[in-house]
Length: 376
Image (cartoon, rainbow, N blue to C red):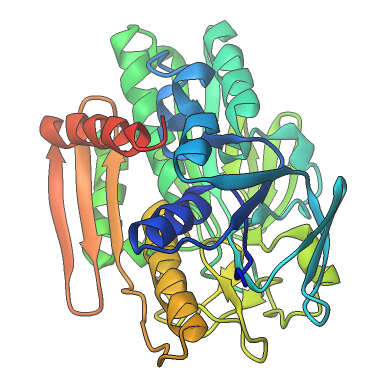
């Protein structure tokens, strides 16, 4: 009798799980649930304002990948999960499973008053392109950039892309000979933004801001956004165009899952990417709350590592073996600025920072093409 494996989510973790299962010789039927049969490469949104990437460049149809790997595709949005009856309820039908990997990603918190006045780039291509169009239409003014966190789960943030937009747009406007018409302000509730990258990185990032004549507004809680300002506990910051990445929380359907949730709204996981108390249910990527250091990133690379661990333990459990495979906690980041990139690496033992070099910017583009090729 076949063992039914279901994967929720066609992002980094979900596709890595599929690839790993088949690579390890798993012949069981696999069903993928996602809203669309496509993969979107979010890390390269940073190049949209400069016209280096389009929506078509970053959207990969998965028909060929799914066919090669003999995956049954269920198009739909998950609305509920019943772990007792082993059923997933979507808006287009019900899917049964024996083993489940949850890789549905997280979502941004939208609780700050007036947040509709800001652009959140990592929500997808549309808001990023809309921001780019607005930027191109401005003849001058104040541009503000910032990110927040989840107060109930401070590590649930995605700040790296904001640094890249900040430096990349600065470079873009210099290339267009328009930089002198704009004032740049970076704001953040933390006094030392980017702390998860390490102390050296914080100093390097703030140093790069100073070099580029970027003003900072740090250490003040954000209270409200308006059409032309950011209101913080430290005062009002005027803004003609605001790019802001809110803190993150778990998938909306998790509340209807009967699975244990963290205070921040993520599904709890153990070091083996299993959901405690529920046999055969695993989790990888941004939808999970994992044990580890407070600098553990919500990052594509981390999602890939967790997906491989989840698959190894799923197969071990299925075969009656000891499931003790743990993912490596590792941060790898190139902070790109169009004209060069800064490389940051961190694991349990090391924290390495390499200064901005043009080769790192090209390396990031090369990696993008290499990564996407496996899904074309």
